[in-house]
Length: 226
View 1 (tube, helix red, strand yellow):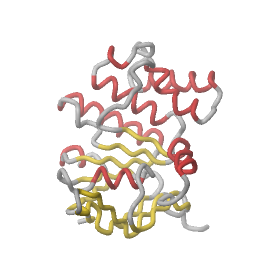
View 2 (cartoon, one colour):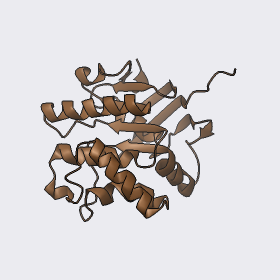
View 3 (cartoon, rainbow, N blue to C red):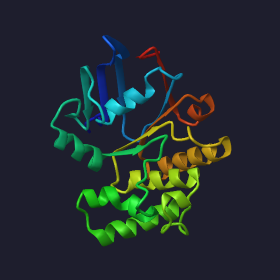
View 4 (cartoon, rainbow, N blue to C red):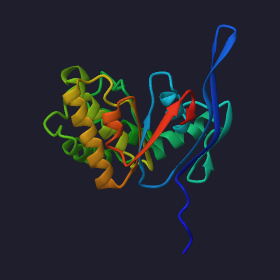
């Protein structure tokens, strides 16, 4: 029986951003391997490069140098259309800011990635309702974002991230805009969903307490894996 290959492999990843006439290095040669079903906390102080690393791992940005392979496919390069399909079909994202569309209700926001993927509208709606019930919003499906609390909006965002059954869920400071109690509830939810669905989850956080919930913690320091 052949050994299962890693889900995600990042090798020698560098990323800098311009500031005036200077280039500010953020990632300085990151190597990372993530297996299917892993739950990994990416920890580091503000400016350590956590968000930048998640963005390049999720094909939201391209590294200046290095390789990123998802399921054996190089995603550090590619056309905008190809990378967009990978992001929508294979990846799920949860951000510190919830990024819900204000004109859509909770169910419509959750179903949006499925509709972009041209999945059947009725099937998307049924799945969206199931996901909203699972995240505790069965009675709030027709509410728009301005009618929901911050914690409820983040629950909608989590359900939306799961609608296309991603192979990898990336959560960037998912509790950053929430009070401590609500933030703990969101982490509890992510931990429970990771176990139930056996999904691969990378969660970036500056909090040692939040990171401790993950079986594996990777520390970023000055743009490198410490």
